[in-house]
Image (cartoon, rainbow, N blue to C red):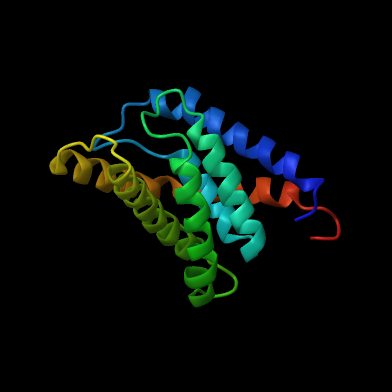
Length: 172
C-alpha cells in the first residue's frame, strides 16, 4: 500500500466506525447486536493482499480500541484484528474462489465476524477482562452472526465501493 493511501483508508474506516457508534449501536437488535464496523473491516480485508490486509487490520483494530463503550484493555482489538487479518488473507482467502461471489463474501464475513468476537473474548479473558456468563456470550455471538449474515449484502457493497475509492490509479 502506498503511503498516500493510508490516510484515506484510515479516514474511511473512521467513517464506518462513526456509523457504528452513532447509528447502529442505537438500534435494539433481537438476539444481540450487529457489528457493522467489524463486517465492514472484514469485507475490506478480504479484498486486499496479505501485507496491506495486515495494515488495514491494524488500523481498524486501533480505531475499534477508541470506542467509548469498550471496557477492554487498549490494544486488544488491535491484536485481534492484526492477527486475524493475516490468518484471513493467508488461509481463508486462498481457499476461496478468486472472484469472491456475494454469497461467499456474506458467509465468510458472518463466520469471520463470529470468530473475531470469540478471539476477542478469549484474549480478553487471558488479559484479565471480566467475561459474561456463557449463555449471554452465546446469545450475543450467535445474534451477531445472524445479523451479520442477514445484513452483509448491504454492508459488503458499501465496503467494496469504499475500498475501490481508496485505490490509486496504479492499484486499480
